[in-house]
Length: 449
Image 1 (cartoon, one colour):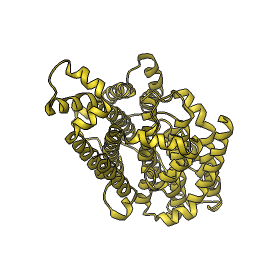
Image 2 (cartoon, helix red, strand yellow; image 1 turned 180 degrees about the vertical axis):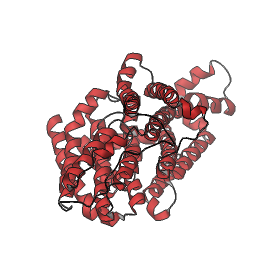
Image 3 (cartoon, rainbow, N blue to C red; image 1 turned 90 degrees about the horizontal axis):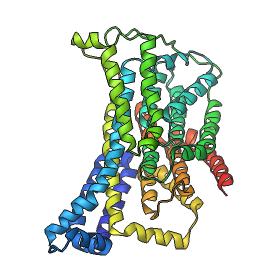
Image 4 (cartoon, rainbow, N blue to C red; image 1 turned 135 degrees about the horizontal axis):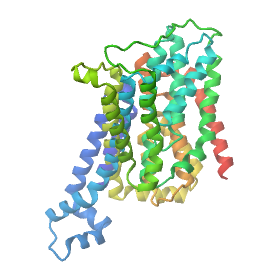
């Protein structure tokens, strides 16, 4: 049964990696793998419990008679629910942060960013887009940041070819910025939740490699652009139909939303409660402020216009289901004991964190950054706080996702929004990301050797 479960998960990962070919949504595949895996596990529950949790099961029985029903109850309460809780922490955090972004976006709190793009100098616009994206993605998830910035860029740049270059730079910046903090992407959030890294140590270790992995391909992309652009000037929109907020109100909401997210690591360190609770607290405060500022529209029963692109609305739901499915699927593999056998094999034959990183980067370029990162996180048996292993995996998985674009959700969003081909992306962007990754990887090695 262990072989069957592992085979199902591997087949699911293959389908996830070939999503562009099969056109089967990877969130559906992940959910299927997670649910089927646990159903098969519980069908042979007695064997797995006796081999992996004999002592815990004996304590659970407390002199009662063992039976198949009791075994299933033990699996449901003591084995399955903890994995559901771990996945739910990530999903609830994503739900809270994405709702925060939608409230801010619907109230025009990001509109002033478009004014920073009011230039005809291509390189100035490229670096402005990159820096803004890098900083925002360090606090928000990559997908939300990418879609928001590409949508903003669409309003400025009419040329499709130039939008493809700018969009690629946005994806690279979003992925690099997201890998810099524990709240920037789901992979870092998982590491933080399980106690594998601390927020400050994680960011300080990866700041230089991430900047290098972003800056080198961005500089090379700038050489593909003409000196001057034909841009369409952006005017701060009048939102009389969906919000009446003035400038100071928008800035206050932006401070509450983004500033609140910055406070989450401190909240976690003080209370030791899950970070998603801090995110929900920030969301509740921002929601109340939104209700107060827009009370006239609320009382008039006017519908607030939803300016968030549909690709983001659907992508957000899919990403949360995908995260849940992957974590449940890898959890059942871990409970079979297969990950321990794999880790022992790797330690005996490789035993090099740097080689593990290279392998993770290659796999994530064709699979998916989250699935790859979670696989490498799950196989390591002993969690050691701020172990270099986790930082190397986080950096390499992020970098691998930039090579073909299909390795990250932000890259897939770019391919869909700009109708780009993977071949064009790799010829013009991917190999540049490989070069930036190599330099950043060497810096990471020099710092930690």
